Image (cartoon, rainbow, N blue to C red; front, side, top):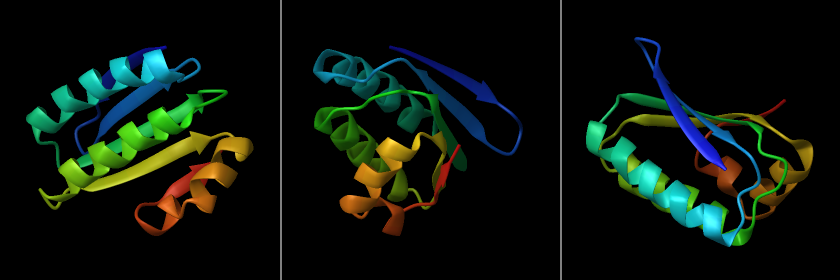
Length: 102
């Protein structure tokens, strides 16, 4: 799993590539903590290259959102695979932030 960031001027794009299993979720947590410290006004997480994600990865995204949301910034997920979207929807993450399917 790899995480890259790109500042487009109005948003920080966070591109996650590869499967997010338990081990990768810890790496994701470390990278997301760095992003929170940057205090961007808007984060768009691109999950188009994530074929699978375990519950620990989903949990790390939720923790990130909670920490990020306290700064009143905006957050959304784009490019998610349909199978992951169904999981995110089942745990009602689509009620917390916008999620668009690829």
